Amino acid sequence: MAQAYRNQREPLLSPPQSFAELNERAAALLGQNLAVLAQLARLRLPDSTLHGKGFAGELIEILLGADAGSDSAPDFSTLGVELKTMPVDGNLMPLESTFICALNLQNLRGVDFWHSVLWHKMQRMLWVFIRAERERTLPERYVAGYYFYRPSGEDLRQLEQDYNELTSLICEGRIEELTAHLGEIVQLRPKAADGTALTPCVGPDGTLIMTRPRGFYLRRSFTSRICASLSAAGTAKAQA
Image (cartoon, rainbow, N blue to C red):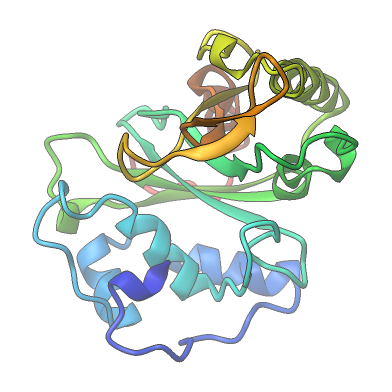
């Protein structure tokens, strides 16, 4: 994904081999704006925020040495850590929901939460917070903090419940009944470059229908808790 902005294909950094090394790399980004970081990563800075969607995430992946070669593996495969960048406001609160992973609509039966891509992505995460209020230009946006997260027992219980509720509807051929209101932590929403993309899925009568691809998103109500944990811990937070 990062190659959309890169001038060369070879990685800048080898993957981190320990949490201490990953932590050190993340700490080095604190307070740095995207213009400076783009130069370090040898990336072309997009012309505007409109054309730069996803740029911050790709940039941080390169500078931390993310190495995942597939959508189902965590970004740091050796450490089992998924990287997510989160745009935040001046209070370090999320500005939007967070995409976690796509859902294969044709391969759900027999795949429980503990064997799902969602679980593999969320079992251990590194959140990098980017100050990204609308009035900030892309070069002015900067790394405001980072936080290592592992789901609590209660989080896991609710994630499993959400996963079961959402995927059961699909397995029953009721995908069109899915709405963004379902799910306490995660929701299933259309995920595609545009509204014309379609993928096969089981329909109401058991035959295949064509529908929009879906992906799991974390609700802002949940990621706000992660942001609050960062603020409460006072860990790795740069100037607000």
